[in-house]
Amino acid sequence: MKPLFEIAMDVRWGDMDAFNHVNNASYLRYVEEARVAWFKTLTPDWANVDCAPILAAATVNYRRPIGWPERLRVSLLAGRVGGKSLTLEHRIESATRDGLRYADGQAVMVWVDRSGASIPLPEAVRAACA
Image 1 (cartoon, helix red, strand yellow):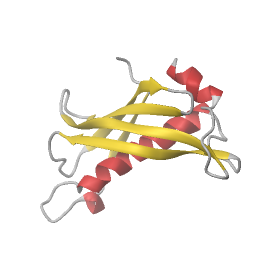
Image 2 (cartoon, one colour; image 1 turned 60 degrees about the vertical axis):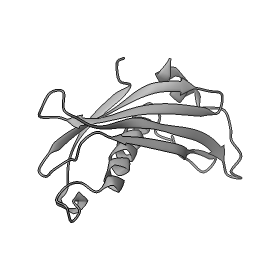
Image 3 (cartoon, helix red, strand yellow; image 1 turned 90 degrees about the vertical axis):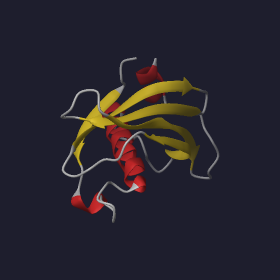
Image 4 (cartoon, one colour; image 1 turned 90 degrees about the horizontal axis):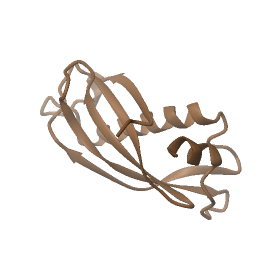
């Protein structure tokens, strides 16, 4: 399946833990950075005073530790597209070594209004996932 979006990023020294590999929480930050960058390509007002996406659920399958230095490629793929939610699949791979996957999983995003009530997916998001 072809990714909706890919972004390259470097592992930062501060992402490391006492065991000299990337802390597990940093994996979710990498995916978050990719999601925000993707949203910004769709529409400049992807999060505004009236509505924004929130993270409803996330899974990460840790395949192998990430060391430093490393350049990563984070890919987003369309999963389930619902009326008010979107499941984005994600992959974290080495950008310098083909076939080296560090993690994969998915995140469920729900769009909400100011009151916190869920609302229909924005058309720009729905169209990008079609």
